[in-house]
Length: 348
Ligand code: 3MF
Ligand code: MG
Image: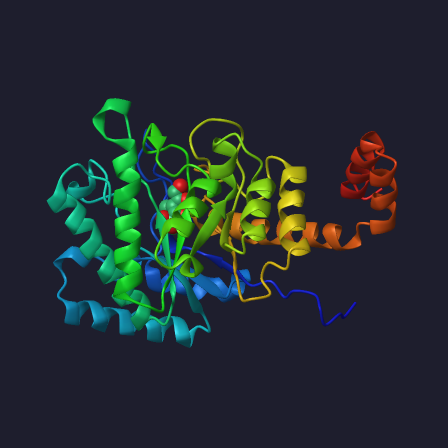
């Protein structure tokens, strides 16, 4: 079946998605792959985009001079180009430094807020050097453990100040906010895509601020990821996704896409496909972790499987009989439509 209008989806993941299996209760269970080894996996696994944190590109970034930072970025740029890969995003890792314990942009301490901004500017320098225009902000510690520790209204102002400063620093970048309702914090200030888009419109360049939706983060907020995506798509602000899955309200599991709830995954693929996601070059990003039990030699299967599941569900979205669907909708026969979808997914 060849049709000019069909989107050719391009897939990405981050180097942290191949990992050693450590969790808060136990140490690593697999030896690491080096960054150079990971880069070699991408194409073979079916991926053309790499998602980066600033220090995935420049390790020990805080100890590096500007010249060293640029030099290291050029080395990585050459490496990924040699492997036919593109940098999709670069994200400042603002949650590991001692200066971000109380939050980065929203810390109560002005010098710690300054550190967060300076670090973000360095992240933008790296992004430029690796020819990527997309900065992702996962606002990990922008929130609280207890309500009284911070001023929630002022925190929104701090976030906007940081975003505006970045927009001024580089007129070519776009900022994608990746909302998450909790973890590591008890409560995050930007828990949903609606919050993120509110910040976008309040910024000085709304056309350059949008969102990245992670399935598990939406589920943790008690929301349906496909509806979150639909909301952002309407606003033309869905510029990346982190597809994965999540079994209910617990720690962020980052399970393989579709592994927990196939129908919920189907609806994410459907809403992306129906709204032209990917036609302007957006990647289908994954943010998935393999299980701790997985032996090292086969610790990349979750990536392959998530991509395959996406493609199977894409086929399901494309072969749904629209006339049948419309008949059920016109008759207000939700029971009939429900069963039609189930049978379609079951291949009946
Ligand atoms: C945490 C996340 C993050 C972000 C990443 C890129 C470490 O739940 O999803 O992964 O995706 O920082 O923005
Ligand atoms: Mg993510």
